[in-house]
Amino acid sequence: MPLEGQVCQCPGKWKNELLFGVIEKVGVGRLPEEQSVDVRYLKPWQGRLFEIDQSRKRAWFKMSEIKLVNSRRLPEGVYFVEDETNSLGNVSLENSTATDGKHMKEYNSLKRNWLHQLVVLDMLGFSLLSLVSVRLALDFILGSTFGFVYLRLLMDSVDNLGKHSYNFLHSTLASTRILIPFAAIGTQIILTRSSNIEFTENMSSFTIWNLIATMTGFSSYRLPVLFSTSGMLFSSVQNVTKSIQTSEKRDLSTESAERPPSCIVLAGPSGVGKSTFIRKLLHDYPDIFGFSISHTTRLPRENEEDGISYYFISKERFLEDIANGKFIEYAQVHGNFYGTSFDSVKNVIDNKKICLLDLDIQGVKAVKKSLLRATFIWIAAPSMEALESRLRKRKSESEESIQRRLCTAKEEILFALRSGIFDYTVMNDDIDRAYEDLKSLLRPYISSGMNF
Image 1 (cartoon, rainbow, N blue to C red):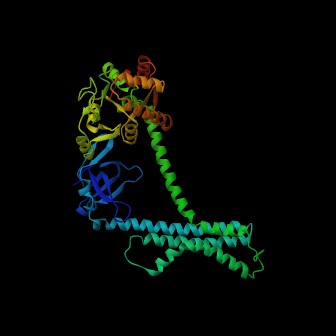
Image 2: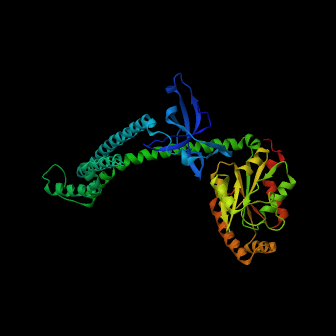
Image 3: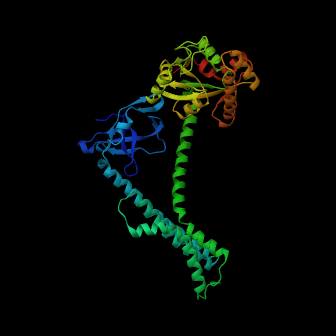
């Protein structure tokens, strides 16, 4: 019997589509065939890491339609599928026949609705144009007739995708549908020249307006699809708006003081003073903040200790940890790998502390995409000259390394200015004053004593 929170593989919306999902509810029936589960779909995030796909609705399946996979839940709602390769294909496609049939009914109903909507819209357009010009209205309905045929052939082409059977008629019509607009114009010209209808005005003439009316009628086949897409987009915007409103209400309530961000991300160019600020915060507020010790493949600098400044590991070990999904984010910077592991952040959060993260721009992007509740603070240098001076005072960098870091710093500064990711900026022109500015930003968490 599956349990809530377990990851399973289940049919998607389309035929032969298999997706991962999290079981949210297990329904127990009197008979085995009556037992069912509610599943929330997952989407790939990074490697074998998956997160909740908010764009998809919950799905309902019978027990026989799903397959449990080896997985584990990581912090902030991220799921690590331990055996993704072996899991794929283990779900019997025969078990999803009922689900496929249900989705095909929805698909066929959608096609019928589009065709009905097209007919209604074309008749409405004909009626409105008749008030202006009967000739233009007739041109419009001629074009819309060809548009209807084009849409129907397009649907048939989509239906035949992936089928092994060959139908000469469908194949021929599908391959020539691109000629339908020209056929509409040709038919219009032929009817114009051979017309003997006297009750309509200027039936024997052909102007640019007649061509526009015909092509407008033909293009009307796009309207049902456009309306359907717009409806889904509007629904998605409504859901996002509700989520934002709910989030804003939660942040403005007293709950926000009780549930601070799980991470404070400090970012800035190399040499700007991020490590100094983190050391000061950890020294002054050891009960409030904790530091996630990163992993790196670079060699330790002077006064750096393994397990305190970084976990210094080999490149082979780092790549192995990537393959095992142990990192929230990782990046290659200046030829060396840096990474923040799930375990490091989880250890800090489990100790009821806010995790301080020292990340580069690649790391900031990764955390922003993750489900971590993070506040992003950009530490800025007063000038490039001041930044270069600090790098040279380290006396641990070669000239080539300094120039490479300065070049990277320019790109990072432009990103910080344009991206809008960062919540706050602290100018480090004086270390003591900048530290006071940083503390003032974090004052709500410091003064509240962190009531988790």
